[in-house]
Image (tube, rainbow, N blue to C red; front, side):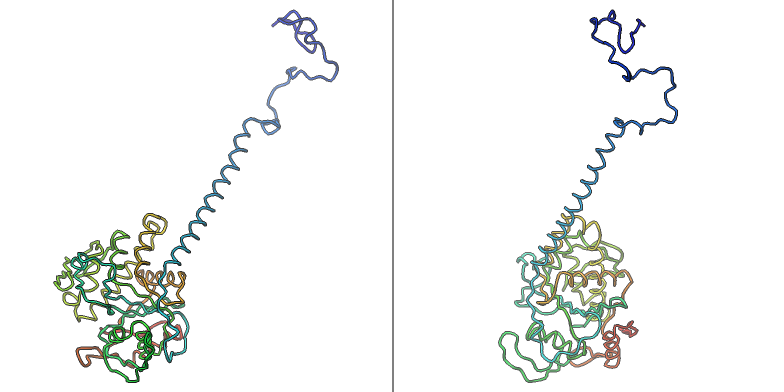
Length: 382
């Protein structure tokens, strides 16, 4: 090493005389004078530690990314909610239903599957074997109670022998004073949803809080939108009327096959209408269970087609909110997972015109348990 002058390099070492003059007392050249580096002094003792800079810069960026993602997710969720809510067809006015019973605890939904062909092309009617009948009739009816003891799903056979009370026409305003003894599905064919609700309330004493109805087209489209529904079919089924043609065992049904399965009442269903209602319960609960999965709910490419397919043909009451609809949907999912109960309306035996007579004592006990939001202990033998 060349000799060094105090406070700077020697002028003879590559510099000009005086260029590195001694700045005076108190100046620290920064050179080590013999002490050992290290000791108790760590990196944090240096105010401009280059190692800390990347960490200081990364933390704000990470927080910004997280906050941005949360904001985007909230905006997407709120936007989806209001979009879906605006698509609901609130067409059934339950306020015009006459002589309504007092409300009990919990919430009661009347869920109706109609045979409406609206939205089906001529080829689809042929493929689905729906026929070309005009208008619409009830193909299935279910009463869903949602309460503190878990949901209860009760099928109302469309061949149930009931009393249709006097009513005022929902569109004509005409008063019909005659009481009719007939099948339950006749109420819907005479004056649609309002008279069906009035008839169910009149024969059960249970107030219906909300109404939901879906036709053939929407049902099949929902199934296709979720990629089909897995069902475990207990026996071979072949029915030319509905188009059902299934082998025993687990299989995934598409929209066309699903429609045939829930409409079949001639093969593999046991007691025709009662057997079919059991199949409908199993299928709808399985559909709800499969739809409410993260792969559907969190995937917009599956969520929007699924919701769109249902909302296009779903008809609800004027007071139904998307929140109510969601509650109904997840209650059906709970029924499928074993957290609820599903059953037929208790039947005592046959009635006129090939219909089914309700067991009045059991129905009264069942309704009382539902009104009080108690655990349902009533069973159906069929």
